[in-house]
Image (cartoon, rainbow, N blue to C red; front, side, top):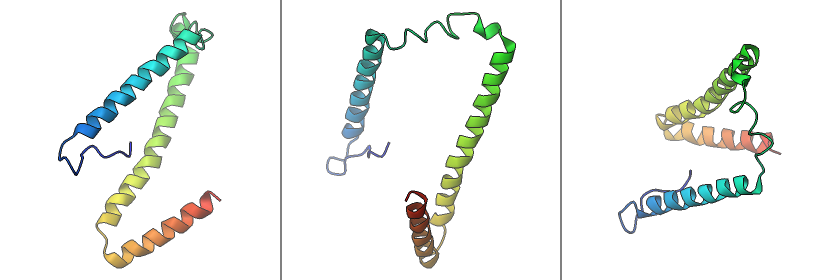
Length: 111
């Protein structure tokens, strides 16, 4: 997520391509390991391999929960994206105030 996709020394996108390949490689290995160890056997007979999708009450509850959680996630990340856009348009004094304020808020929120 936080890795740069452009090598400033080489001027190419080689590090991004290598990062993507390594992440994909280890994802496939991890997924294969999970299936090989049998950690998902307990769950494979659930929704996909049964008639659970015909149970309208369960599907309705699942969809309503997914919508609520998605909306909450959208609000959470959208707030920071809007804040970033607004900070980019502020002057130097306001920018420094918000940096100090947000640093103080984050430090006290997690301590």
